[in-house]
Length: 148
Image (cartoon, rainbow, N blue to C red; front, side, top):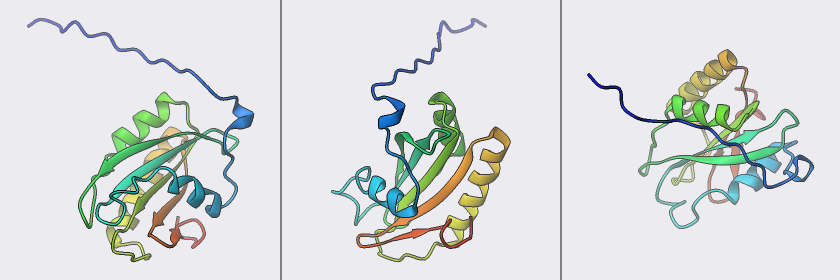
């Protein structure tokens, strides 16, 4: 059996000074930042899952469009979340998804995946700061509600 000729490399380049990156202090800051990341054309018909990558000063390094799903769910693969976080040297993440139905309350599945992501992050020293559910008019913050 022959070993494939594949070379893997990671490159980090910063286009903006750290001091110019958006700082997150409140869930309202998260809401404002996330509204710019979601696809507005499909927001009301398709669930999307986005991960904000943050540095140790809670400044946003970037965001990752993890997945697009259907009307009521989307796939969340922890390996993709944390491999991306590690590659961009994130020390914290904020996860988010939208509810096209307009329902603000998290489902049992939302609570379970949040717990799994938090536990995985703990092992990797990558803090989960919040899980924010967006609807057309409002948002729900797990951190604000004390269920993170």
